[in-house]
Amino acid sequence: MEERFGIKRDIFNDYLFFKKKNSWWILRNSQKLYEFSTLKIEMAGIRAFQKVGQFLKPTTRFTQVFGSLATKCFIELNEETLIVTLKGERFSLDLPDTGNGYLILRFNKRAIGLGLYIDGEIHPLLPRSIRSKIFC
Image 1 (cartoon, rainbow, N blue to C red):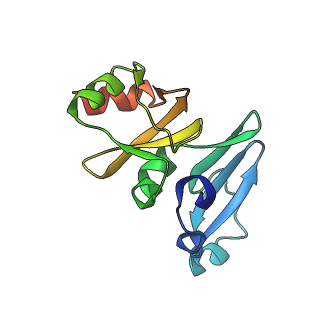
Image 2 (image 1 turned 90 degrees about the horizontal axis):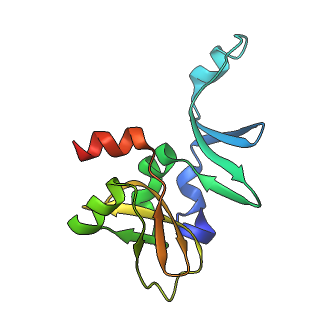
Image 3 (image 1 turned 45 degrees about the vertical axis):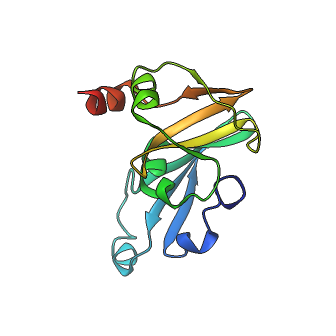
């Protein structure tokens, strides 16, 4: 997160990360966790990343929680690009200082999700369920 998005590592000092198959999950560290350590727990926390090819792709939920802390590789959507994003359509944007890869999409300084920047084009990666809730 620090290398691509500029989110400092120490932001995550109070969290635990754990891996399950091709995903990494994040959970706030708490003394209560140790009290429940004898229970068989199916799932806890939120999925933070998943392995996609050779890359780690942040999940939408993770991006919404921590994306406002990004200092690089994010774009602030205006109303026009927000509507295009919510329709799930690609749009062109010249970002010469940003290499191809994932970008955090923000609107009114709030992270709404992730996009994939490839050769001057943004491919919004918001799930349809979230796009419809925001678009309504």
